[in-house]
Image (tube, rainbow, N blue to C red; front, side, top):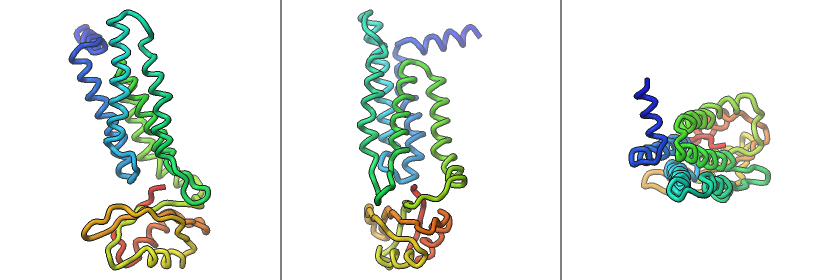
Length: 230
């Protein structure tokens, strides 16, 4: 028990092993959160979250180092700037789709939280960083279905679609219009050799369930894959 406490105390100090652990742990925690965002086809994916979390950890460790070496200043000052400054990066992921639908709020909140996790890891508060990472992953990956189940369907909804050359956006629009769903916005993704990608914003006037919308989309000839993104 005493050896364990000594080991934990050693890792909370600034040394080569603790710095390596903090950087690697920040990369892993950021990657776990970013993995879910990447699966949801959000612009801020795994690498973005890794960099944000690691950068925050390095900033916090630098503040700790400056305080130890120069014996002056506040070790939390640099970290405070990260908390406020990360808002600019998060704001860049928020866009307005259609007339009233705002997208990217969860991504922005996730980036801010990833930075906070990085700060905790950077100062040596490993347990808080790991627990917060697990909590964020559960909220983003698992609570989404729970939210969809208990909340009313949104007027605007977004669908990620992969389709081949036998179908066009016009064909998809005509098919969905027959079920009271209007296409408000289309963002075309990278085109592969065998299929194309698009993020389609639909106006769900009849408040159809998300499962119903996806089923209707998948019934279109030429559509290979469809998934809700918001």
